[in-house]
Image (cartoon, rainbow, N blue to C red; front, side, top):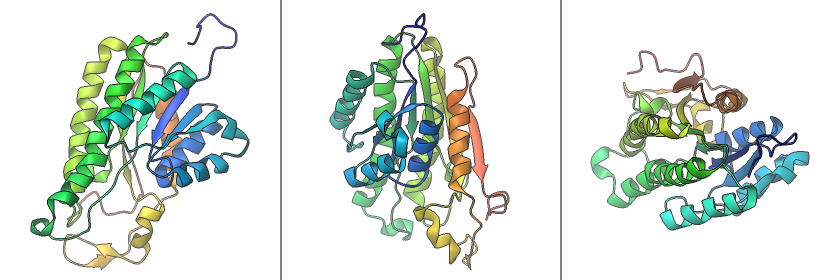
Length: 258
């Protein structure tokens, strides 16, 4: 545990889900650059190790811990490992997410629906629940949880019912977590990201379906700007909180979308 009176207190510890690529990888590397210890988690061990390798000299401050975050038992085991390794948890970034194939709503299968809900919503809740348990009992107590919401937490894209529904639900989870965390010095905020340049948004360079049925190229932004925003949110004292932040490519279709 951290001794607040110690001249060399233990460093802050963060857990980033979906840390094997994209926003998760960029955010994990930015947190490491800011001096954090970071637990990298996600389904693919090879992708997590690639993030760890990209950390360079900071790799010694990382723990790669593969887990199926849609499985509550696996999540419980993950957080037990975090606490056993570092003694505390100061930040959880619920970033892992997935989408379903872009097909008409009435053609989605129950399995496709459940898969998106399992990663985008269930996993975020399971991780939040386990983080609460650690943050409430550690000393100094408390911590911060950041949820990856997305522009789809406000406005849908065509053929995206599961993704949009879960991202709207994340907003509710953020508000409930922020409220329930007050008594325990646990802050919770949400970052809503629009068109960060990652492998997931690569298709936007050749055109994506718009609400009017047209296909259009959409501007993207450097994912580093998202990572910088995560570090800012994470670095605030617990008396302060960014409840909602939108970071988006300036010229993407959001304001007035549709």
